Length: 533
Image 1 (cartoon, rainbow, N blue to C red):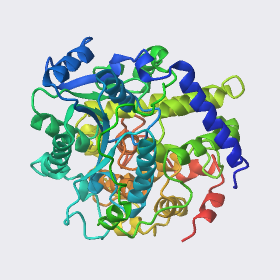
Image 2: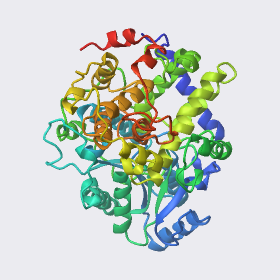
Image 3: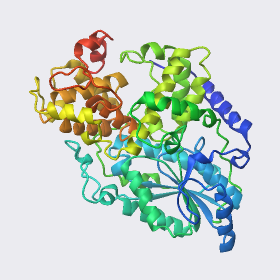
Image 4: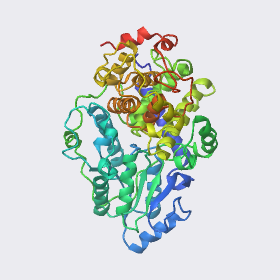
């Protein structure tokens, strides 16, 4: 359905957001920055949580060097300029120290974007970041961990990506990534580094490796710019379910759900200006799966994400509470790709939606539950559970019941080839698979049904079913390779954040979803007709 909201309306709304930032502070230096968002990873006077005098001590280090060295923001997860707590903290330091501010992004397609669909979405967003940085007098650098052996352009048949070798560093390209960032640090004379937070093992390994390589006198800090409540501040342990983390998040969000200050034109510019990035070169270097094409429904970048948020609020939010579990209705936010690539801040989306609670209370509360509570619960799971993508990462009751029923007869039983090509006898499942492959998204309700059917049908049992579901989700969905995706599949197949149900064949005590149940919830024929073979 075509949007009824005009481009002019969106631009005025975005201008209003800009005014909101300026209303709280002219610069981040004037803003009361919540230090709980930051933790120090390395450097002089190293503390796990940020020392209250960190800024002063770091300033002293720079003054003693007698050199106007710069601050670097190593952008990983949060690929945007405004509404970015990590970028803002980096500018806060650079303004205090009166030094240049740099930003770098390291391309690691094997993790970030293994298909042309993902790579195009990410690169188009980064183009927007570079343009904004240039306008703000902030050099934006690209480094790379691209190798000639990244891929052979052929889609992987199964979840091989999830099989870890003996060296996690080798699998994650940690040495290559860290060395590329370190080379930049040395070439532009950096005295302090800020990075953002991503709980998955690959970026965690990159950050750990850089910390090991850095000299002791260079402070290295991490800011959780993705969550409203930083994951280490929300809870110090793995939470069992939404009900156990919900009160903590709501209570701590009272002081953290604030308007963002603006990221401003930086007054201390780097002496030599950078040439524009040759994006055509970086696109030509991509060697992942070219068969998974970009989609036209999702416009990459912060501007595209804000436009999607605007149309959600003004067109779909009123019916979100009643229709969000009906795949035939157009009422979802569709924001997950922009959240995944950090092109818009979830906190911005939540704040803008909450402004409408007086009018659409049930819809706003339902959206906040998904975008705030469930999403930050997913980060908690992946941060505190290193086995977030395996059966061993499930609760013990679920591991036990899956093991007990691993060899139950599957009827029907399908090979991976049959499922990947959507040739099962379940027309709803086939349509969901077609939606995923063709459009790069899968309706949230159907993602649960889709994953549970893979468990029910996979001839090799639950571990193989989990690998296949994760592979397909990550390979085709624009929001793949994300904590939300891992937890969504783990909930469906392994009962994570769920409870045990009445025992039955194949599923054991894992919650079951049936075709008949779907018939009672929405018009299955309508959805199937949209995604024919």
